[in-house]
Image 1: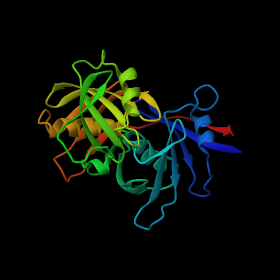
Image 2: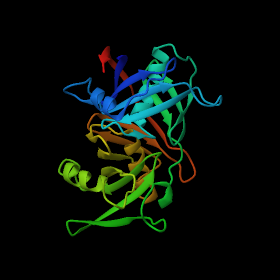
Image 3: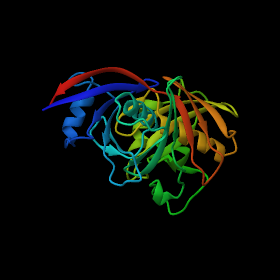
Image 4: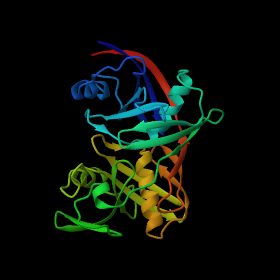
Length: 277
């Protein structure tokens, strides 16, 4: 089987984008992992699939596969690439576009002149059953133990589960070791994305994220949203924040509970090709 693909990235968080609007190709987890493999495939953090929507209220269905082949409901950097892709490929000239995802819906707006994209990421959810988090009730902060050391964190869903830890310095934070351990902690029944946030000022943070199913990536859009929301909820951040990730910067805006988070950042096409599976 041959598949045409487009390689894209948002701040270096890279994706293989597949157009299944005319014909849906059933990809197995093993085939998806092969595409994502950086030695034997194309190489990417995640695979983005464009499909026809199941309901007339939406313009497209937006599907996301992790590098290990598992499907997830949200990817903010991917969403920016998604709207850039459908415009560049002539699949839609609408702006904004509304897309359905595994866990809800999103509104995506592109500024073709600046190549920046603003994504309405939806309202964050905090109840443990919505994250999901194995705790009986919502708390402003949670705690678990790792190797006998207590770890404090905030938890919320941005369409996917996030834990956010505040650290003094993201450069020296144990992102790989602690991120890998917390991703699969029993407290997170569907695993979790683990964010390590350094607060520089009330409107400026630095962030590294260990993404579930992919490991540390150089940018995570939903992780940036989760970190800023957690900081605002804790009274540490203002309503508009610049998030510095390894791959670049995102602007995150949130006015408070019950409202959507808005994320603005770039999306770019790298190359196109064909892979044989």
